[in-house]
Image (cartoon, one colour):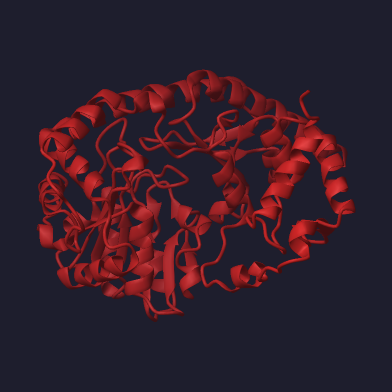
Length: 475
């Protein structure tokens, strides 16, 4: 006979506590999360939690949720566990915001309509070519171990040739292979900046949803943007000190803004004047739709002023975990040393596969297909938005990238919008996680979900907005 669902939940939690995965002081998943995992309503979860609380294993605490307060009785009599909560709280890396953590976890839930995910649809994954590239690597494979500190030389040589097509002159010695753009930022925070430094950046910005620089004791200082990108005149108004400027000039995350050529020149000129180094995060560059974007800021940098970051995660596959930093050789030497201390190099196998993509010409062919698909998706979503959200929201028309920046027009609670959408199976990214304080914004991705899910999700979103707007008007 099948056990009742609430009993399954009880046994699951007891097992987690009993084997030490959830030691004393651990916060257990929320009622909503458990209900979703076990496919039950919240009343079933509450019944299970009440029984566990009666047994003295868990306890609800104000402001902390439900936490483990005791081991199972057989373990309780024989051993005690350290208070891991104190160790967790003492770690220098700041946790992601709760909303960001929930989004990260929910992005792996196949039952949700993913209107937030910054990733290419599996339909665009070049499976057959990837198998071919991996087959070539496997056929020519010899014994391999750790790579040299800067990464697999044939990959850096291939990247050097590729970067020349973007106007960037970079020898293999000035390129460091990293495990994605995020690691590049982590290495910079560890190796080039001291505690108390300031990171100037576009506002809103994806960087606000991370705690890479804040955990290293640095503060973020947002600079305003317009339709042409970061406003350069604001650079001269910021207080000086040890600082760096982070910008995402191509199809900026989350707004989708494309920085103009003139603006890029102004940003570099004023940054050089203020002796403010630049981190140019250009991971969306190749995802242009209407026409190729202006050359990178790095391409007009003649003084080693710009650190340039690229990646295959958005254009090819995040699973490869391959990105790169381009910069002055002394900087690359410093960052490569820190990378060796951190992980002793990115995957040798992934680096070989990445090199194969670049050297065979398949990468450029793949990009052409991706751009074609993104154009169809963007145009489709714009039609759906016009059909269902006209009068409820305003939006930009992105020239590339993954995102449309939606401004919800009725005054309503974005927390309520996010929660109600999630309860109805739709995952959104609210503008608040990117430090967008004015207005009610949503970052909507047209890159991942199917056309059916995009249409259904946007339609349901329109109904939710209408409902919340009506409720708000009655208050």
